Length: 256
Length: 306
Image (cartoon, rainbow over all chains, first blue to last red; front, side, top):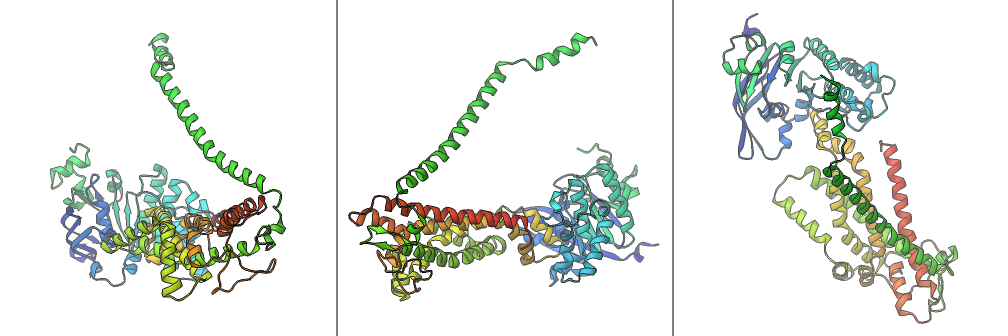
């Protein structure tokens, strides 16, 4: 399959982001292809989380943020979109720390479909079960769906967060360091889920664990100090001779 | 490794060095001071209540609450003042609580950080610091004269409402700000509007803080004398014993705080225990409202859906 055949799901062009007078993303351009897993690695303060927030425009809630350049999802510039809520349903987002909303487990997952206007009990039940199964949480909580989501353990809450992000049937799923609060076994189970999900949706995986990107990602982007150092197939980025020597140093932990 | 070498550092670890002794002393001292201060908080409250009840005991009865003042207020009960206070507090909160809470939701959840928001903030803080006698004068000018409500329950209630509003706004904002930002972001991330987020997550999680702020203003509204004295409270109003709705809104009324002042200082030959009994009823009413609020909060916490 040649590169031109692959449909571009998200195109980022000359994106700049500044908080006040401090620019933290300096003109980056890349695209995300349909049904791929794009890994984004890079040290803290590289602008990874801010980049994700530009994609679903939750950056709007940060009053001091100034964005320029363009982010197109399915060819449509997100900053021109009238229905930003539809955009956010299209792009699922999983935050680094698990956030169980102080609602029942059921309501945590049913929240997004309800916000979108779905009220039929049968459909909601189906969505809740499907998403909890996809997030590998169903078996643990199916008997106590009406207990509080905040009462779950950290790892369970993280899977609940993933279930919630899947509940609005996103076409793109962004995971922001989803595994920092959960144990290795659960991480592996979720990674399996991601591999399955890739057949249906596009995944952007921001991670501090280079090996996680190596295991999962089709392509990997190395972001450092708000600039793209390298973006290529995962094999190349983790190979002995990536295009940029800094990439080599970073993925081998001799970065400094 | 010999046994000696392995165990000697472990032994040393539990030796009481001078640093450890000092640390333990500081810990004990801090605990003792904090404990004393918390007891010192409770003791005056208990002393006040006990003293009031003791002095009020001869006349304190249900009949004292429902009876009307008799023999030129030197005998009888306090019903007109009691029901008047309920009127004033009820109406003023019915105005200030919704207004204040909704304003605070706007300021905290919607308003952008700009000069207008800052001015409103500054106004709220400063209004909260205005003395009640100044509110009273404002109420007199604005409601009694300018709005032509006259000396009436309506004027007095609105004056109390104006007085309590800024504090309700401030305390509600505190309660809203205490809801973690991550909850809001989680909702926005799945495409919820601000209002959907507020209704589903923000309000249910701040409602007890909001209620606390509002309830504190019940005691304040019930206890203030100056604002109602200027705008609608009178020394005496003839009312039938135990009559449930004795006042019309355009009438003046009696109120507990004012009545307490009257019987304590203005009327000669009052039975000694009457002012104290009035104070007990005023305090009891406020505490009863607080208790009701706590019950409501517990109920809300157990029924997150609302």
